[in-house]
Length: 153
Image (cartoon, rainbow, N blue to C red; front, side):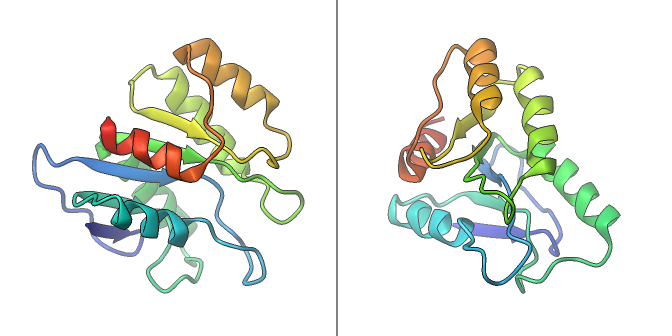
């Protein structure tokens, strides 16, 4: 598996499968980060293609937000699958940018979007409704199940 972080150049061979791990990013060191667990799960499932992680490889937030936004925009367009995992918790992980990206991509009808969230996620009823309305699918409530679907796709 090749992980490409947001402080790294995006290089993807034509036809290479890739998964973008979309969802909220912790803004402090106390809030648990779900992406390391996602990478461990993908590795355990034998995924050997590309994973886009919209965080710096150091785990520190980027100072240049526009560079971050541009990297995410590019990676989202290149990714063959966008796996939204939204463990929203207020006030520490609201996911405001995630809301915008989710709405944009689910309404694009690209067929790339998968969506899941734990049963403990807060304020996600509209996302659940929209995902079902547009895709006809229900969100999954386990990260492993979401990533298994992403690999199948």
